[in-house]
Length: 151
View 1 (cartoon, rainbow, N blue to C red):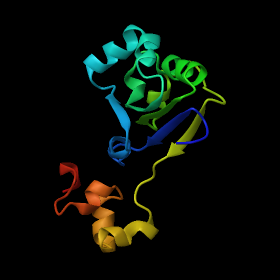
View 2: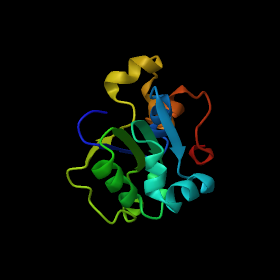
View 3: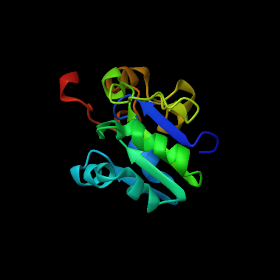
């Protein structure tokens, strides 16, 4: 997570953004889908960040906050010792909550579904399974259809 103060991790639903964020060592994780977490952050973003002046934090589903760009802008501009990972949907609806582009303050990374070159990690499932189960890690590992609508 070096470079820009904020790393914005996007990708399709269930691609593994949360799993990746939770797996980072020495990272304080905040699930912004939780009303309690949203209240904690939104009540006073500066007080929240003052309690975490350095280290690494991850905001999962950050687009759920009322004004996520404000939090990220404050973190980037006033807390240079703090590394921030923010995850969220790659859909346009999620980005409408961002009132600032965060130009120069963020680096955007797209987490893609399983690549062809990575299939060996999943025991090289046959084409039929890949077509029916999709390219998301959890789906490729499942013996059952991942979505009831597929059947």
